[in-house]
Length: 105
Image (cartoon, rainbow, N blue to C red; front, side, top):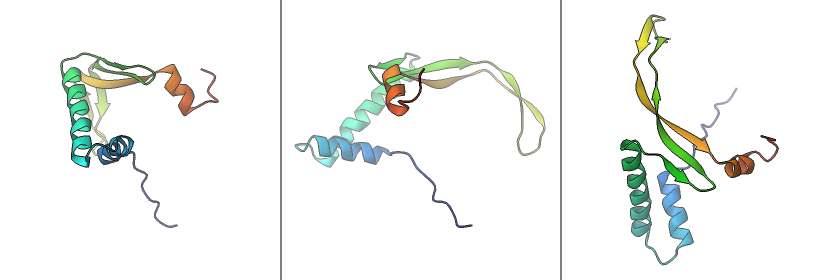
């Protein structure tokens, strides 16, 4: 059986290329600065614990995770995973429909 090629998602470079292609008056450097600015604003908003709502796309938010018992996969030993914050994305119904038109939600 041959090796399967690992599928990768889109990268920041892909987004820069899309911004550059869409707005031909921008240089690649300017497009990269725009993408970096957007990501920086998103990061700082989430670090402040505030949600990011993007119409027709979804909501990114920081959510508290409760402490729980877990298992070390290497040793099989039980361990405690302390409470922490996690990032959650909740897609809009419009995005869900675009991704899976058959889903009757």
